[in-house]
Length: 277
DNA sequence: CTCCTGTCCTGCCGGC
DNA sequence: TGCCGGCAGGACAGGA
View 1 (cartoon, rainbow, N blue to C red):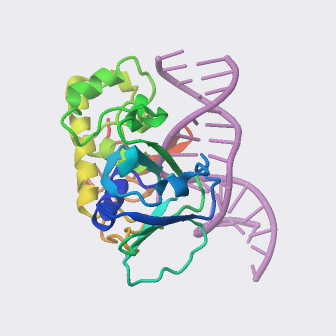
View 2: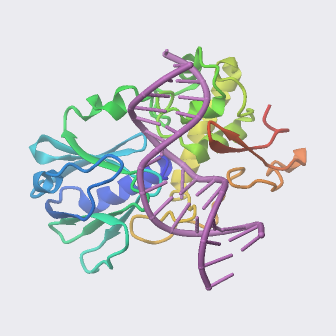
């Protein structure tokens, strides 16, 4: 899925297309996402004006008049297409939700694996919902830095890679950027999280910020089927240092090592065992 | 508390 | 060509 950078790109696209627009109507063809869409979602959203579109971790929150907030997660395979008013969108398999705005912009949520999530909350209380109660700091905000990260890793003997995937440690980091940040910081993904010293957590916090910012600047990464919200492809030029590059030479060519793939907590980790200590 | 496993679901790719 | 196993960006529940 969409990790933080991809979700942020989607958020920006939605903001451009929908801010201050009213929702004319919503078509829902499948309610049975992993967490089902509430049956009255379409009814409650119809006629509402979108006042703000926020992101928290990998979630998008659309604040509407009438004190509603739509909370949206794209899961592993979710995509958002934004069709301008003059385009009649072709109906694709797995288009589960189609929102029509007053200006005839049409927003489509397509999610083959249906791991996504879409529900209604309250505009002033969405942060009290389950996903956000224990969520860690926003990595790109001022409240995330080396000391904060070190504090949050205290007592966690789990491998640092696995800890980075825990949304309670830091929000929005997924499998790709966890690998990339650890490579950038030169830290072995298998190190127990609480063993990192001050200099290392400092380097890691900086690396997390760097890889996320870089990816946002590149327009979100293009991986297999990731598309921008306008349906155009992302940047093919952008590629990862280690993620999905097993056997490739380490991009830090001075170490002359090959990228390794291991499995941690059931998920692939890619790293350079020479560069990452 | 932490940590480990299994599960939800479809699509795609590689091997035979 | 087709079938089958393994794997995929996430998050949660349940149990040790």
